[in-house]
Image (cartoon, rainbow over the protein chains, first blue to last red):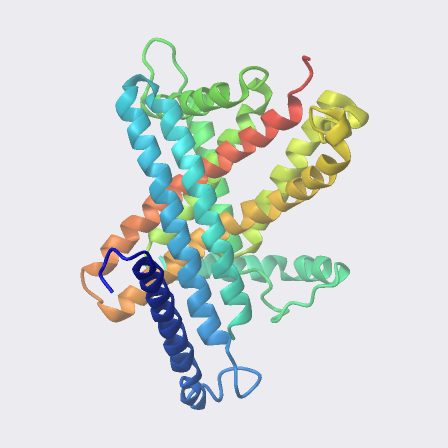
Length: 119
Length: 246
């Protein structure tokens, strides 16, 4: 079957889907193999098999990453706006500071939950 | 420095532990150590308060039109900064609110900066302090909104511009207003607490040199958070007292 055959495109897409599924299953298997990690966290929290430390770490990582993305976009917009119109510096800076603080506070809400839940 | 603060706290407890305990028991709160219910946080807040009053007395006593001295320059600069921001955000009718806004800015700024001194916990890293400030701000802007628009008018401003959407918009606005207390508190508290914690963690890892960077970060965050608190108060005031012209 040559590479330009119409069925070759479908086969390539099928192969890509299979590969994604393979990766997903490998990741799931790795997560299930992580149960020996619970043996060390015995005295840490209320039950023996607690997901709290892992959840706290992953949750905080996601919150900080998304906060970083959002703040990067806001800063990029503000820099571009300032480059287009240097006279509007005061207003742009005010709005940039306000936006950055709001996004920061969303990530800090997650930190608050981490501190409330992790003993 | 910490010993001085501890000494002042010790004296405050010695004199005021009785009345403070009585007040706390009446409110249903049982302090862990009834002999010393007052902590370092209140001492630091009182120091900032006394410092602000002393500065204002100093400026008032040395006011001069022809030859302004340094305290007057500083006070004028702060006043112009707050006035410029208020004019940008509120447009008009901001003059009665300038004292409260300036006090919020300076108080939070100095409370935050106290954490830079070695060994001293930031007063605003104790969750009660930002909570108190946020509750005060909430009551303040709601009170001024009700005063300006009347209770019925104030409730009507929650309904939004279009009357058809008001059953949907009214609960959203009420909840978002109530969430402002929590968001103001958590923003200030978590920023200061996290900076303190970060400095401590890196101090325990690398005791020499690196924590300076985090102290600088704490200072920058202190400035920005106090400015944001003041700016948000202005925005909430503008939203609460607007809407009189249709």
